Image (cartoon, rainbow, N blue to C red; front, side, top):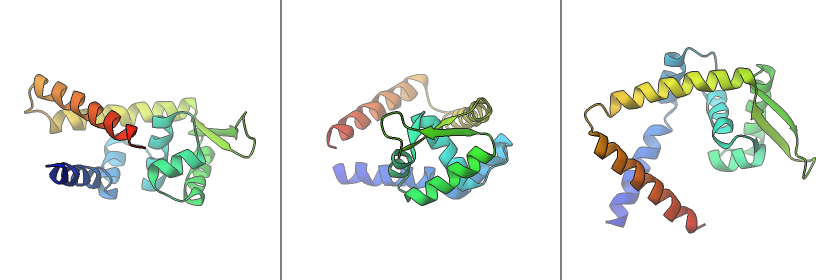
Length: 144
């Protein structure tokens, strides 16, 4: 059973991580971002505020790759970076007001897409899924 659960998780993560899905999200949201920068922006919003290293670890990407995308996002006025107060060698990124507005658009689009995907699910099924996903996350996090 555990093997099948793991396979289902890999299927789900693989589906969510497909670049073509990001491109659809970008198009539906109407934002002007490259797919790689889009992912980094969403990651920063999720971890708000975060270091390049934390973001690279979460995304499974190299430090330099994430750093380049952050530079692009900062030049576009979507994120602000500054040295960490605990270690000036660590670069911290957070959303600007404009970045928060873009993330709000992305979140709204994502919610509409999820509503469409789960249109034939009952409220109870959705609540059960949410509870089980949170439980699974907490259980797996304890293994770290």
